[in-house]
Length: 77
Image (cartoon, rainbow, N blue to C red; front, side, top):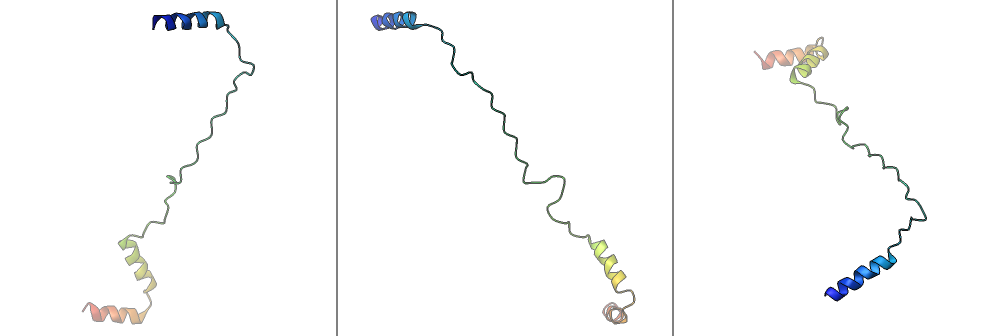
């Protein structure tokens, strides 16, 4: 084993000539990150209305409707 190591060291000494590369390495621009599919600034769907809002809208729409008033009077006597 020692003989092979000596041959290797001799080979390195004989052929150890520093050579600069012919083509200089270029820096490649880093790719830009893709935007996340989850948009944090906008909700993906419109939020559901709250029950109070729904009740208020129902009262506004049925304000002058006598049929709805009569049905509600019968139901909540």
